[in-house]
Length: 385
Image 1: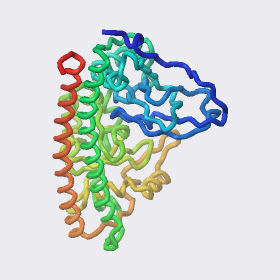
Image 2: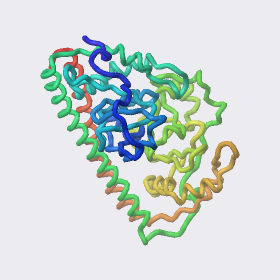
Image 3: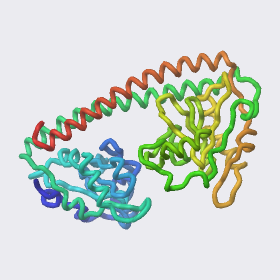
Image 4: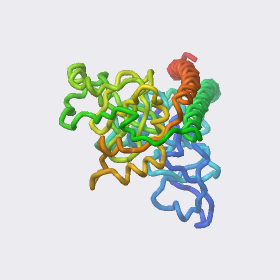
C-alpha cells in the first residue's frame, strides 16, 4: 500500500510558458462524465483561462471535489483535444508518475465505492458547498502491484466498463425512440380540438408545506417527489427525502400511481415526469402537483405537452410570485391541449409499451453488469484478479 501523494502529483502547477494567443482545451464540470470519461473540451485562448481556472494535461485524472458531483462519480481521465488544458476550480487534478503508476489503474481505483464513500466522510463545508479536501487524496492508500500488473488489471476493468457503456448507449437510443414516438403523435395532423387540461386530467396539488417536516424523514421510507427530483423528464428520488410508514399513511391521498404525471409547481416551469410501473412507491411532495389523466388520455402525450417549450413559456407568463414562481390548479387546468384521436393514442401506447419492455430488459442486463463490475473492482484491488 502506497499513499497517492507518493506516486502522483496532486494539483500540479502549470509548468509550460504560454503566450496569450496559444490554444488550450477547457473542460467544465458538465464535460466530465459520471462514467469515467470526458469530452474533448472547448478550445480557448490561454489569456481567457490564465486566471481563475485549474490547469491540467491530457491524461491527468480529474476528481470533482464538490457535492454531489464527487458522490455521483465525476472522476475521469482527461481526453482533451489539446495537450494543455484548464477546467473548473471544482476539480482536483491527479497526475500519476508513469514510472511507477498506470493512470488507468489509478483512475479505476479512485472510482471505487470505498474511496468515494471515505472521501464523502472527509468532506468539509456545509449544505451544497461541501468539498473533498486535497489532504484526503494525499492520504489515500493505493495498492501498488508492479506496473505490468497494473496495466493488466486496468485493461480488464476497461473492457468490462466498455460493455456497460454499450448498454447505456443502447438505453439512450431506446429513450430517443420512445420520445420520438410521442413527438410524432403530438405533431400528427389528426389532432382533435384544443381542450382545457382540467377536462383531460384530475389535478391534485401536493400537501401543504406544514404537512411534512424534516423530522418526518426516514431513510428507506417512501420518497417524496419535489421539483428537484424531476430531471430531464425522469423522476430521480432521493432516499434521504422520504417518510416513514405513519407519515406515509397520513399522506396517502398524495400517493403517486402508475400513469400519473408529477409537475413541479415552484421555481423552474415545465419540470414534469410520468410515473412508470417501475418507479416504485412515491408520494407527491409539497412543491409539486399530480396530473392524473382520465381514461383514454395518454400520460406520455400529456407529459410531452407539459415539457414542451411553448407550454413552459405559458406557465412562466401565468405563474404567480415575486421571489419564486408558483403554479396553482387553475393556472395549470386552463392550459389548452390538442391531442390525437383515442385510436391513434392507443396505437402509440402499444409501440411505446413494446419499447419500454425492451428498455426494462436492457436495464436488467445493465444492473447485472454493474454488479459484475463492482465484483471485479473489489477483486482487482485485493489481489484476487
